[in-house]
Structures are given as structure tokens and as C-alpha cells.
Length: 287
Image (tube, rainbow, N blue to C red; front, side, top):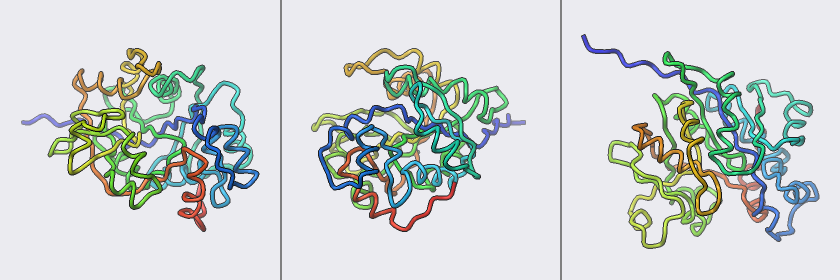
């Protein structure tokens, strides 16, 4: 009799990295913003910039819920109040339970994810081996619900591989910016072989006919926290999630990387606001 492979639970908990300082948003000199948008941008609170009448994070949470997420964990700075107030006082999400974790210092994405460990263990679904399963994403990207759903129902660790051309033609991301994103080497059977941050112009993945990009939409088990705790500062001085992923892969973790030709809306700079607002005009998020 053949062994039955354990079934992974649906990963219905998403960690949202919202601790960033918004440096690019603060530095951008575009002035065609409403006073409310300008105030949020000046504070570096990208996810709270009003877009089509609602903070971007309202749209993000709505898409996560559409994709099957039931709990979100915001990783924020100590003393952060704006996001807490939005989702504990101003609105009461009906489709999502909202939790918070604090990253003491902005040390990088691996450290930010690690900061959510205790809350993840408390609220995320666990498998028969005692591992919690979770999603992780950015606070300033609006991901399509279809991509979220793929990860919620995946059989284990995974990330969505976004087609670079589709990010340009269907989203609001210029080609020059896509070139700076992490490129993925995905095997013919859809397994991640390598992830390369900001590849040089001559890198083979930059010359590949099919270019797959990471937009930081991942599915992990709690085993990733061991790798996050073990990474050392990168040349940029940060504890990088990509280094934790590479360490996990060396340990034998297999990341499935389904490729999609779908857009992601990115709100990294003030100059992104008009394009994102145009895309979301008339859309009412459901929390």
C-alpha cells in the first residue's frame, strides 16, 4: 500500500508587511495629489493613501478576502496608530479578522516576517506535523484575487510568478521598474530554482524570452521563521527575505511557482497615485 501524502490546510492567514518607512513615497516630488493623499504620502503611509475614495489597504484586504483569506496580520512599527485606528475603530471588517505584530526596527523583510511569528502560531491553520501555513504580501501592492486564491489552496510553500510583460501592459508598472524586481528561474514543471534580486543587465534571466517576476506574494510554513532568524545583513545592510528563501531551498524546501499573466497595482511613489486611482475608479472594497 502506498503512503498517503499529508494534506496541507488552506492558508487562510496573510501577513502584510506594513512597517516600511515609505522612503520613495516621501522623496517623490509629484504634487498633483489631494490634501489627504499628500498627508498620507508625507507620512510614508502608502497603504493608507486614499484611492478612489478608500485607503489602498481597503482594496488590498478586499482582494485577500475574495481570494479566501480570513485573517490578516499587519506587521507595523511600535506605537503605530493609523492602521490600527482604521481597522479597529473606523471600520469593522466583516470578512476578515485583523491582528497586529510589531517589528521593533526596520531591519528588512526577513526580520519583518519573523516579527509575526507569535501571532501566526496563534491564529494560522496548522497541519498534522504542527506547522502553521501562511501567506505573506506587501501593503503597497494590490494583488489579483485569483493569484491569492492559488496560494491559499496550494499544497505547500509557493509563490506567484508574475509575467513581467503583463505587469507592464495590464498594470501600472513601467518596464524600467520591472527590471529592478526580483527575477525567478522556474523549472518547466513549475518549481522555483533560483530568485535573483535586481539582476544586472547581462544576467541570463534578463535576456530570457519568458521573464517571471516576484511581487512578494508568498505561501510559507512556519519553518521559514528558522531561515529568517538565520540570515545575515545583505550588502544593503538589511535582513532580506530572499536570503531566507534561498536558505530554505538549500535545506530542501520546494517552492512551487505557478506563472500568471495578471496585473499587480503598485503604489511605491506619489506618481503612481493617478494611475492606480484610474484603475480602481468606482470600485467599492468589501471588508
